[in-house]
Image (cartoon, rainbow, N blue to C red; front, side):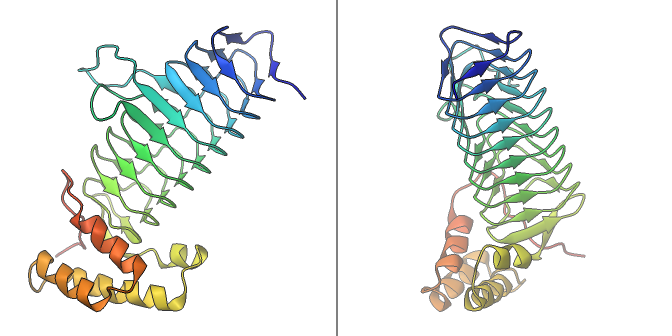
Length: 264
């Protein structure tokens, strides 16, 4: 099998296409685009700017990749969009290349499932094995760790960080950082505990889950300062890798405050 380009597609002669790539009807591929082996663009796909797409991706109709960031300060700098391998990108998904801030790269990982109508804004950093349900969207500079699930119509505010293995409920507005392994939901989202179902599905053993649950209770109580709770939790669970990843996330500098449980 060789690369197949439909007669109605417009592919710039400078674009770099890997082996066995498929470019469907009415798809447009710009000169600075690189597409990896066996990736399939079905039809009516727009790929422009400095955009790199990995191998074995499946891109559905009416997807827009690598268009300019929606940032009024952007003045046409040669920024990038980088998409990894084995991603499923469904209809009407938009992923913008970066602004002239940060490192100039919007990064999407591997093995993601991006459902209909989702939006990944400029300068976002998206991990591996992400699931974003229909119409979920995010502002610029959002960081999302591996194995995160975003429910349908979830809205992530710019600069928010979401830790690995977290789950965000559908129709949730997320304006604060979400801890790794956390569960967040609600119109103005708040923590509701740990993503226990996700942890079991990802192969965490009973001891790891027990330690995470105990660490969560220690960290998110009303007594003492967060720094005191971090110190006590670290002392108690210094040998637990998942707990230490949770603590490292909380201690990492961020422009957003940390999401907590809802208080009455």
